[in-house]
Length: 479
Ligand code: ADP
Image (cartoon, rainbow, N blue to C red):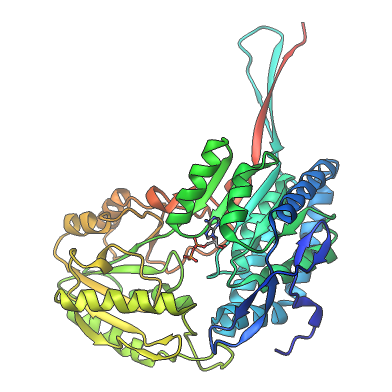
């Protein structure tokens, strides 16, 4: 890997402003060719505890920073991320596999949260409420909640970090971060830039090692006041149980099963472009990626023909090769899941229109299945791959029932022109986000998050910072 700033690639953990090694380590491999990229420390219980203690100390000191000082270190971090975008994107593609142009897009998207919350750090305010007594005042003030334990996934190894760390720091919290074991190098590169930006020692610690052990320590350690997690619903529920036992505040951004509804009057060109993006970006490995496609029966065959032609054009291969649109899947387990879903669907009557097979190693061909029915696993499970599963529908009521027939409730998409139909569907959808004639939810300006098994809490917008604040009420007698 050719980095302009070689220091950004670090095989260590970050504790209390120092980058540390460990005797025990694990190997991280490149999903494109299986080769080892480097190794990462497996911290022991004592080291994790020590890291949390240093986060606690950092929090006490950070309380003395004024709003402008908090804003300034975020501004500096933002500037350094942009200055190093090429290196950050290369590290990301190397460990995660997505095409380099998408990796750059992710770094920019991630940086936008740092910029946004650098401004929000200046806007934390309370209220002056009418009192129930004469010559009394009630004032609320918002205070940083304390040490935040953040756990992030491999599919967006950079943006999922800044989306948590930036609002937490803006609120005045310190953060102890555990990145995915599959993609730790993007996290550490952000850590190096944070130190360079002037983050005091311990304000951002990055711990690596056994996920279960670290998660348990976050839940048990009294210094950690809040856990912010992005990942699977299974692990989210484990953390909810652990955090609940100690009454810790929690944000969970979990799995999704996004429906993509194309009504009979939809602008098909717009819907097609959006579907290609919302289904295949990051090789389908995003919690907002389209999971179930519902096409009105009147336009099903016509739209399918256009969709198949577009999918045929997709190029799968090494993310560093500019011509490729889709990189490798993250690991063998992900491939096996897609293969299982295809086999089950075909056995139950689905038709494979294109693809359906592994190309080589961890590369899978973009696939379209039609005739999907509700007894198939693919109608209910999160796919997390470049596999499009299509169902036909006859009425608005039918598509609403089918779209809501899932435990998940993160993103959803509707394409059509009749305002009544669109509003009827968007009102009825049990999802945290609805994209209407729009392909993406990705912006720091809007709240992002789900309902049902997709979790709770919001990231982005002015609401994102609230997750890291608590309210103190002052009752003042001035008689
Ligand atoms: P995925 O299946 O997409 O990898 P996971 O939920 O397993 O999703 O992983 C998301 C993040 O959760 C990663 O950082 C992973 O290391 C972490 N993780 C996995 N298991 C646990 C656990 N038992 N406790 C805490 N974190 C965990």
